[in-house]
Amino acid sequence: MSDTQVAIPSETLSRWQSALPFWISFLLIPLAWAVAMAGGWWLLLLPLATWWTFAVLDQLTGLNLDNADPETPDSDLRWYILLTRLWAPAQFVTLFGLIWYATRADHLDSVERIGLFFGVGVITGAIGINYSHELMHQRSRLEIWLGDILLAMVLYSHFRSEHLLVHHRYVGTPRDPVTARYNEGFHRFYPRVLVQCLKSAFRAERDKLARKDRPWTDRANPFWRYWGLQGAMLVLAGLLGGWAGIGLFLVQAGVAIWQLELVNYVEHYGLTRKHLGDGKYEHVRPRHSWNAAHKASNWLLINLQRHSDHHFKPARRFPLLQNHGTDEAPQLPYGYPVMTIAAMIPPLWRRVMNPRVRAWRRQYYPEITDWTPYNTALNPPPR
Image 1 (cartoon, rainbow, N blue to C red):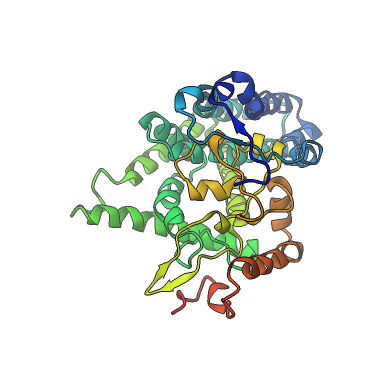
Image 2 (image 1 turned 45 degrees about the horizontal axis):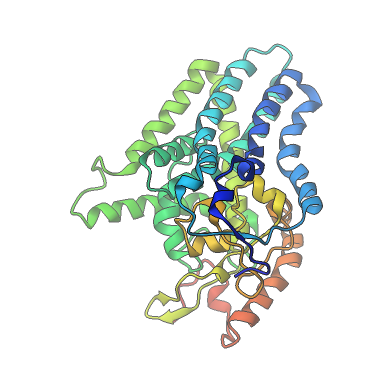
């Protein structure tokens, strides 16, 4: 399954030492408080530490091609599970504590406050939304609630419905807004998904209720929970910091959403499932997501870059996600910290990624000679 497959015994995984590198994200919380107290140019440390530092660490630490035993029970993963469960309260205290602090700190001017919450948004997006993604895939009601609370902190609660009911079902097809089309630049992708994902998420929940002969207004619709949690977050920001607090909350939410959609753009760019006729597509396979085995950024992002296996086995917890080699999944040349920066520069992105998409097509679908229907979000599925 991987270039180098090493079975890691479950008893090794149960030891906290094996989980320790993934806890590195918690170092960002004291860093956020430290730069808030220092102000000035120190505020740049938050975004730099989150992305640029890990881009460098990826080059120093190399790739991790080893795989844990996918049958490892949850009882042996307690330190990994605790990590994702603790992040929600830690982020809550940090976000709202900083709103209270920043709106009262005399040493921070308006520009510095905005800069601080830009950095906070990088954390709540790159880490918080990523952890909510892990939590929403679990069966535990506690974990689902924690995931919803994390998403409410960035005003993107509908991501759960869109991700579970739309993205995983339709990935690599024209019905999935999040699958970036070949040659579609990020600056076109971003406004498109902001609108389409909200609509598709609401439609999916409405249709799910309709199949049970219930209206969308039924209290079982999770959008009531989404709206309630998001409203509570805005009220709390206002109570702690007034209108300035609400403004700073909105800054970090906007940055967090941008971070999420940058990653979404990278994960499936140009990759499509083969159309089988009558609106049907082949099953999702590891080849339909870009894979990255870079060690340090996978520590930060709890193996999100093993995205090929996540779509292949969505319920698999992050420490058990498998690395798929070049024979099974397309590989990114760098980890997400570098690739998301490249995505912001469309000519650079196309130079790096378009040849890889074309090579992927030749490798997996040599029988398809006309890719035009797959290249745009506007065309209907090929017939």
